[in-house]
Length: 126
Image 1: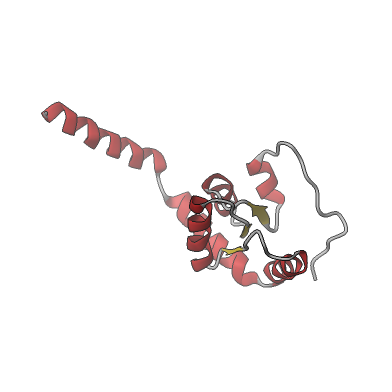
Image 2: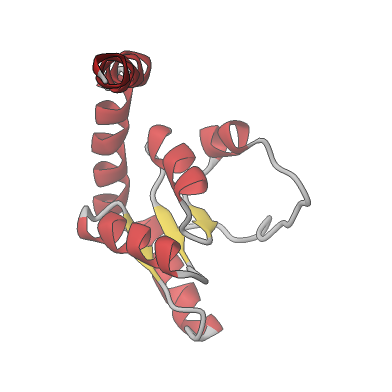
């Protein structure tokens, strides 16, 4: 059973990587930066989006079973239930950990370098 005695806490600024290293669940707006940090650490996400790109991002995360999309109209009682389910059910954590392995294996620098090289080559030809 999850413990809630030291929750929640709110800060103006939090080092996302540091917070994710000790988190069991990340609650955020569902935007790419926060979601990426959480998933890179194998932490599931409860996203409460406010705009379309956050909503679309969380739909994909929800489809992967690494997170849940909650609407801003979701009641506090329903949010508590979602959090309890996510903390008590390893399905969410397992999916987030699978994505963390994929993120770790993906060579972002090499991919970006290759893409930029192709773009630059296209301009040189013209």
